[in-house]
Image (tube, rainbow, N blue to C red; front, side, top):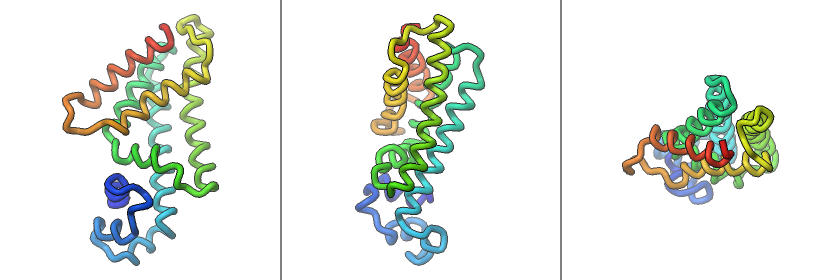
Length: 180
């Protein structure tokens, strides 16, 4: 899977062959098929695994705080850090998603909806408590998710900002977005 992440990150899904993946994993092309039915199956497994990990990140972050305000900061900070630390996997999970079969997309979309629900639930709680001024929770959820997901697009470990600094800045931006 690590070899596939490297290959997909370098070349993209369509330009990567199973030979490329096998070469990076120091195995024969047939060896890839021992573990995965196809390149599509490998992409699906990566996307599914990445989304499961992302769901764990946001759920754990929410559980780490008691108030909607603290939960939102924890979620956005953790999700931004995750996208920076796991930028290669995150790029594939987010930007190669369209290459999944309709059946695989449906499975991964169910995980995305769970991730969105964690954020949306916190926003609803913050609106109900009076901590947030959010006229449209769905649009704000989308904006917050887009903000953190985009980190995977531009992040490079050679830049001066650390994942921790990015997470802290994005947590602050999240509070501004909900007018906390």
